[in-house]
Amino acid sequence: MRALSLCLLAGSLTLTGCSLLQSKPAPTQEPAKMIEPAAPEKPAHTAPRPSPVKLYQNAEELVGKPFRDLGEVSGSVCQTTSQGNAPSLTTARKRMLTKAAGMKANAVLLHQCVVLSDSNGCYRQALCQGSALNVSEQ
Image 1 (tube, rainbow, N blue to C red):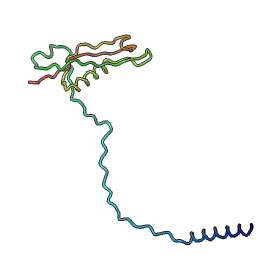
Image 2: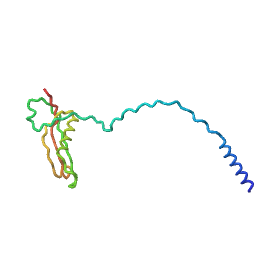
Image 3: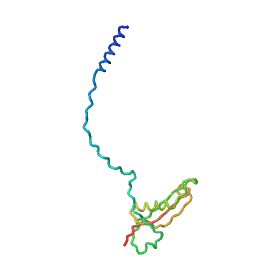
Image 4: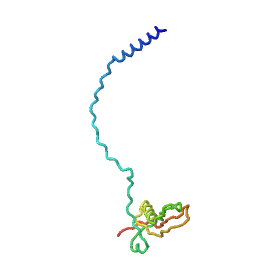
């Protein structure tokens, strides 16, 4: 049994010794590659800004100006609980103007901006409504 163990030990040492004697192949030199400069990255939020939409407070401001009515628009802000941030009429108005810009309007005739209580699942809601218009400048 000892003889068999010695033979196996001698054989494994011989194999290990042979593998240590082998030389590793020399690494091949690859030709240098030209690194092209990276294109400048575009910002993640590159949504085109809508053209400014003018807000008309009353219909008298439109007298003498040709315009086309594109439909009703509204913007709202919801305060879900009594501890939440109070709804802002300014934010509701901005959302209304943004929707009008999406309709290709360049003006909005404001009908009303109000703060409502207990409506549409909101504790309080700021709501602005108006008509989206395309006003021609002469």
